[in-house]
Image (tube, rainbow, N blue to C red; front, top):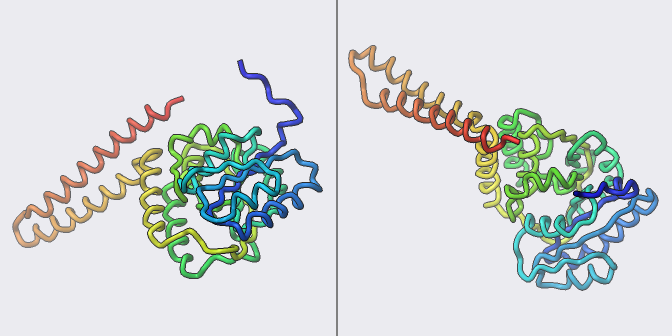
Length: 293
């Protein structure tokens, strides 16, 4: 039988910082966190997960007297977060980056906003937001697609500053990937399962050092969004896709009628729609069984 968490620990937080080759920013980031949290009297722990860095990240983090987890090789952003969450002592998890891009002073407010919610996301829509212009079109498209599929407006799909209750993370831990799409997955999983999620505007600063995000990650995010939505609500994908084939078949059939024939193209359109709708309905039934409490 699990013991009830002590009252003094119910507002305590575990801050997880994944770090890969962040020797120039990790120490400053830790000190900034402490400066933001000390005046609040919040009980906290800082866990830095060195994700197989090839520089002095681990040494500089260790000098700040925090909990350090050193992975033997680079396993990915999500893998580092999960390693830190597994080691955490408290049931309120805060994740942030080691590059100085997220405002540490926003964390106490995000923690306070958690009352009544299972996750509070620091949405990068504040007054000062330094997102590279080259990434903005892909970010906008992926956000709109995810919002449509999840059935809720998502101001920031993959913010790396958020506060979560540990039971929510553990509920979907088997779905959370080892790479950068950890935050996208937990966002979609929470929203599609009916968890209460709040978005709080924050600023976002230019990072210290070089970004680890590459162009191919946009394609990975797109595939992840589709895969996650199919897991939770497959009809969102299969119904419109089947409708596209049906409409194409109907238009071709109408054209054929005007010419006094019936082509295989129209037939394939109708058959394609029927197959996609059947697969969608079957997937929906499987999903309901799999997600049944």
